[in-house]
Length: 216
Ligand code: T5A
Image: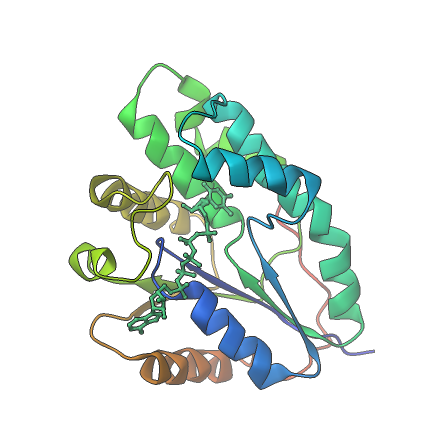
């Protein structure tokens, strides 16, 4: 039986991922599901939420990295089940955020060698379902700083986001099926049109007979 496709929207903080993920979810509705990472509703997600919103809450960088991955594993089976039921699953962030943000932290302090190893950072996510297509939303950091809500959470600092952006680029070199879209100066509808054009170009808007790939 044909399955739905796994579509991932990645990007910097406040780049418009949630807005566009919601639009895609509605376009594919009723055969769709939307999964945001971190998912703050789970037990592990509630610890992550505390970590992101309370600067007095301390975790080692390694622990935080593994919690973000564990949060993805909490939902992995339900993602696979939805795909097999013929649903289009839209992911709002996923493993590339996990690697890029942790790698960016390692560039700020050189005392934790495992945090600067992409292999080490990637390993807990091996086995998770792999997106059929990943869209990466890029924009200038100046425009990012003007977005509503900017600066409220742990990683929303211009200098850090600059490092995150270069880390995403480093991580993407080792992965395929990723398409960057420059959203500078474009309104929500214009960005949606560009995303939809990419999905159509990659055959990601129809059911597929291909087996679900896993990260390996
Ligand atoms: N993280 C995450 C890790 O460190 N490791 C991991 O493994 C994972 C999964 C929280 C943090 O966790 C880190 C990365 C993050 O620092 P999050 O909850 O996804 O992750 O946090 P944000 O990225 O900040 O999520 P947001 O939902 O706040 O940002 P979005 O989704 O990028 O942006 P969105 O769509 O909410 O839009 C932000 C604002 O911009 C407007 C919207 O209306 C909204 O006001 N907007 C536009 N304005 C103008 N033009 C457009 N085209 C616009 N599109 C949206």
